[in-house]
Amino acid sequence: MLNSLKEKVQRFGGAMFFPALLLPFAGILLGLSVILQNDQLFPFATEGSTYTQIIGILEQTSLVIFNNLPMIFVLGIPITLATKESGRATLTAFITYLTYNYFMGATLSAFGPTFGVDNFEPGELGLTEIAGVLTLDTNLIGAILAASLAVWIHNKYYDFEVPNMLQSFKGTPLVVIILFPITILAGIVTLIVWPTIQSGIFNMQSFMVESGVFGVWTFTFLERILIPTGLHHFIYGPVFYGPIAIDGGTVNYWIQNLSDFANSTDSLTSLFPQGGLMLTGMGKTFGTTGAAIAMYLTAKPENKKKVLGLLIPAVVTAILTGITEPIEFTFLFIAPLLFAVHAFLSATMASVLYVLGLSGNFQTGFIDFIFQNWLPLGGNHYMIYIIQFLVGLGFMALYVVIFSALIKKFDFKTPGRSDDLSLKTKKDYKASKKDGESTGSVDQDLASAYLEALGSKDNIESVTNCATRLRVKVKDPEQVESDAVFMDIGAAGVVRSGQNLQVIVGLRVPQVRGYIEELIK
Image (cartoon, rainbow, N blue to C red; front, side):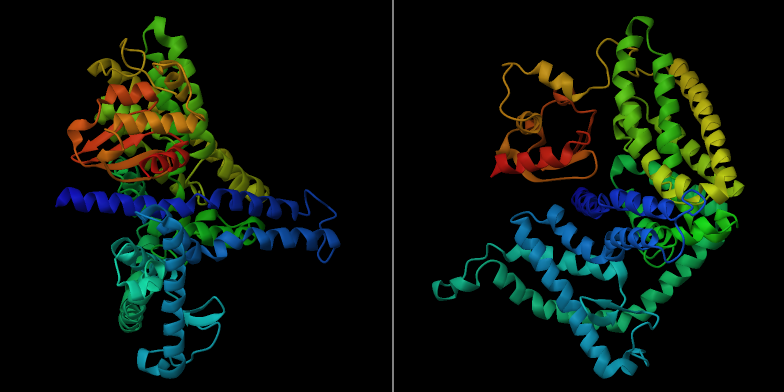
């Protein structure tokens, strides 16, 4: 039962991550628009000019993702959680979310004082507009509730057989009919309990701010150390995209106020103390780079050239995007102690920088570092960014020294220290195909190979993915091939827990998962 619960939690965590993949590009656009309005760099960017108005249009357009995060989560969650007909499940979630908010809006309009809303007017604290209707502002919590209810009923009743005379109600219409009273009930419960929940959220926000450096260290450590379990989504998700640290999430708040932060000369931590919780990217960029250097330095001399070729692409990916699992899972499987040290150093680096005055959207990689922090804010905050880079290099050196010492002391078999262990790439897979023939694209080939290694389509109970991992629940774990087979295909590793497996595929995982689902059908 515990494994089943864990599998469901991991699956839900992956669903939460999927909509967040849209944010980096929107952040780059917004960062560029702020830079282009800087009159020190562009003297013609005067207030009221045609140029400024055009860039202002770009800025407002780039906010479309951030201003509609709840709706995007409603539409994105079913794509991962639906076990059948995910497109229809998405439509069902959308209808459910609108029903949920329309009901609460109409109820508050008629009986607002009964639920503690004495002034039901636009702009009032705790209220918002959803699809043109004023309603209770439940933020991501309401969106996740509506989407989860919709997917649950969809998975349960979409294929439910009805009498011939009622065939027109089969499928999505039946699901919506069942959901209607459930959604109304959820709306009533929300109206009653939301004030208490909101009070708890406000208290949590105060705690996050008041805990200071201790909160930053604890948050960053948990966000790293829980990666093998897949539960790290539940650490950063409610903070980055939910209301736990600040209304709307830290990412959204930072983006919305980027221009104000850029124009202020106050310290970043005083402007936005909650941003200290978004320094997790320091360990992803500088930390994993130091770990990779240590693995290279401790490899056997005859293997160093090969190890360098394997590590460079993974390091570049980690630095630019913050996707670190190909490197982290390499030493996690071989030496959990190294991963614990990594989590500790990553948390300590974030805490040191927070004490020195750094705050901002540093939870991924250099692309976001540059466009959402350094370029738009560099004019007034360049000194803290210089300090940030120096501290990052210092901790990178610390990683190299500590990792190298531990690898040698305990003889950890990191890449290049044994003949049968290396960091695999997708090129290895193409070279290892027995028949030497391709069945289609690289993603299709990978999907076929992974499906065969998982025991064929008949052994698959459910499949989903997060950023780089294929999450699979199999019927019979005995039919699943060894880790070596998966790594020959191109996986960086496999995490096994009973019927649940996590295959570290890499950045191709959404496409591979899609082809696997096609093969299963």
